[in-house]
Image 1 (cartoon, rainbow, N blue to C red):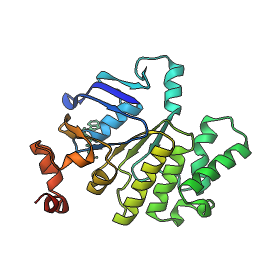
Image 2: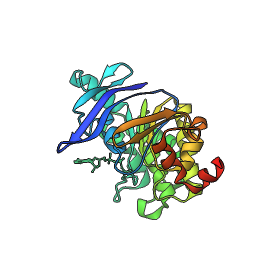
Image 3: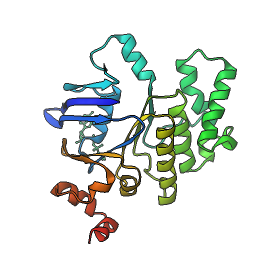
Length: 248
Ligand SMILES: Nc1ncnc2c1ncn2[C@@H]1O[C@H](COP(=O)(O)OP(=O)(O)OP(=O)(O)O)[C@@H](O)[C@H]1O
């Protein structure tokens, strides 16, 4: 479980996050939604240690990320898998080298152990046949799958995905969502996903947090979201034509 308590962050005197608290359970796909510039990415960065919050704390299974010894912080970091927006693959490495990268950097595993783990993860995302290909030779959806394989190669307890569907067609988006949800349930990962994608909200939103100008205005599950009475959330949701028609 990840717990965030009263997270605040300002840049140049402008408050971007205003005391956000929440809990994210393991085995669930937790979504952070909201319009552009509402603080979603900054919140994610505060959670993974890329931006230090001005206030508040982040607990990983009870361990306080910003107030613990170096070894504990290091071991929490090793339990995180991150799927960056755009995939962030190394263009000069093959698919399997990309997936192996965290094992090369962070473990003392033998070549054989790494080979087996990489093969397992590539097989899990359905890419075993693409192991020797270069990122430039595969599609956008396949690149996301490589990113997912790399994010899970260290067997993470926590998985962070920043807009995993960006740039994908609707069908591929659905497949990527399903894959993330399956992996989350199968390995009991605490998964946090930033998304703009209404289909993701409706299909995999087991716990959804809506941010608006740095405040959390709503949280709940997908089956409840369209019944919201929060005006800012209604406006956000029903700017989507399909959802508007569903409500009418
Ligand atoms: N390092 C930084 N320095 C100054 N301002 C920043 C920094 N990082 C983010 N901001 C500002 O914080 C605000 C929230 O940004 P954030 O990237 O979290 O938005 P977002 O909700 O993820 O938006 P989007 O959906 O467009 O990615 C924005 O106004 C942004 O300009």
